[in-house]
Length: 147
Image (cartoon, rainbow, N blue to C red; front, top):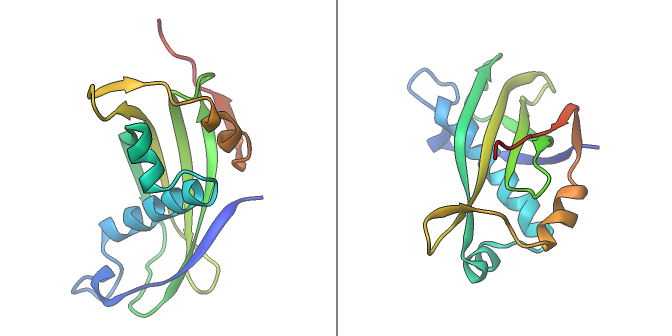
């Protein structure tokens, strides 16, 4: 089962062509990730206490259908891959228009950064159970790290 949220879009999400601006899609995908972690005990304040934060290496968006001004959207999220120690992860988001048609797909690949050392880090062990409960995509696979 996918983790999903329905959003009421807002005026600032749209461009002069009266369709959703390209960066708004990615903003909604990021919001879904933040809400998932928050619902599982990792609020922004908790990340700050742990001195850790997510960073993106790659963000790839495929646009399939327009989302028009005033339309609401549903965004889902699945885990496509993760390394053994949860150091690296890959999420897939799908954005659907009000008619339920796939409008965009966003894939992000990232890791965790120690906010004091400004270096990549492994997250605390409590992240493991949070990632275990993430819905997995049919293409899920382990991310192998190079030593």
